[in-house]
Image (cartoon, helix red, strand yellow):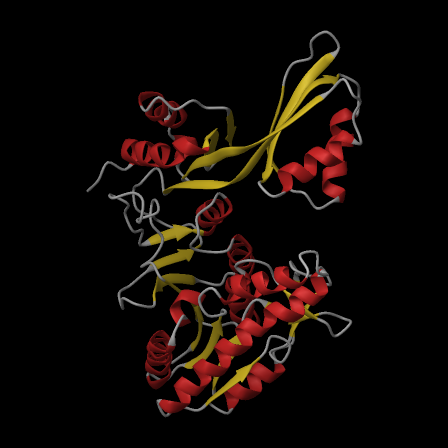
Length: 401
């Protein structure tokens, strides 16, 4: 039939019952004549529990040692799932990331995949084994274990699909596909049959929890077709692929991200190169900046406002205090959220922005910043208004079927 890569997240293998459920899905796929490679995350809250244990010992532990610890979570998962598949009568072998050929760089805690040597994977597939691989991990040139950061198992699965030229990469989650909004918070959220790589990448980057953005980038780069579907409800999910004739829906999704900090630099001396100094300093510490707003100069000064990850907000302030003069005022607001709409067709439909802003106005929600691109519009608002904002914007564009 074909080669199928299947990925299961932590909630899908959270306990013995769910592990057996996943084993059933995998063996059913195998018995249909497919070769199967399975990528698994750590069970449930295992990663968070391991982080908590580390913090009890040393809250400032070296990232290398944290990677040594955190890779244990996936090792447990692959072993248990392999045992469950074996129980159901199918040949199986479990492999850690390095055994599956994952070579990464040496940025502990957020490593990037340099390449995969698929020899072992190909050899096990040739033996007609189901191969269960630990996601989220690899090995660097020093033979140290590394982790790929949050959502890294998605990236592991897509990387395997690309390396093996798999026919399909299925990402199993606890939701039934990609929705126009979080169905747990927006009652009339609609499941999409298809979505483009670009739209999915924007949704993932802007706060949607369904897929890791790095995995979508990789899928687009190598043309790996993804399917997002539920491990608990056996129904068709959402296909993520190249742009094609899609449903006639202008807005594909509304997202919310509360992991945001708004940093304001006020009364900044309006001198050439000052923006370069600020953002190169942040870049040197691997602080990613999202939305940037600069005011017009006045009386020799200007204001620069930008957003970063919430954890990086206070760090950015301390870095800039040592860089800028004492006349500047630097303020960090962590009680904000980013609400976004995404849709590949919006650039050819005038009035999209005004419709979004009208929905927020009618809900008495103030906009602090605005950012736009060809396929998305994002606004920064107060965090306590975020849920209302998502519902209001979703109603405006997707009123229900």
